Image (cartoon, rainbow, N blue to C red; front, side, top):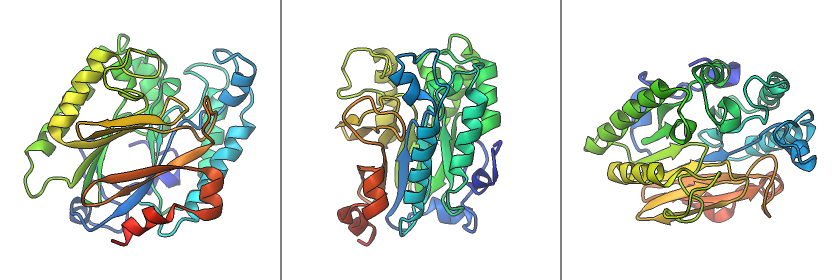
Length: 319
């Protein structure tokens, strides 16, 4: 994994074909269920979109991102104050607004890294690729640049007996310019799912998936949309995930809260740290993992900063 800075180097977990763990914990400890824990899911800081949206110039705008930097810093400060601290924080794509090869991308990425530097070193940061990070039609070059800047575009890790899969959803959406990369992820994913499904007592307590584009927004049978995966692709993934026992899929992209639970598989769509396209407020999602399942709730940055996580979620950690 190519680490953008020291905060990512603290992420010592199971990554691609390599077994890793959090600093100070043995590999065996991360593979064993030891009780409830929680993590933070965030999405779409997307530095540059807020001004571009105001200017009605989302394709060519993005020359100002001060608001998103301040919101990201607010999120970091709020998460740092939580006790106990989360096991990790995952950012589900669209880290910045500028597309690959465009004028402002380097500056936006630099300033996002700077805003995230304040994250407590005990909270590993996990980065998921979004369409603005690697392009609507990614290329080998755009994916390589993402990996150099933020780490691998797909990988897996274990934490507290739970297997987490980070996926490059753009390869599901349009891999016409990089078919070999799509095939590589498909082969890797099938191996991960089949291994997890065939495991017995040593298998994961739960399996969680993180990607940028939601499988669906409200219903598995909804029509194709910019904000979801195509029906045929969606259904195949749903079938594979259910067969393997995936508990939940976490995503962003929609800049609104949405999702649903069907046949035991929770599709979680979280709104943005940055630009809001609906009625939600800037925020992140607190996700509590228990022996029986996964309980989650979106918290505004203001709420998380002043009151912390909701008490009923905190109580689950003490059960």
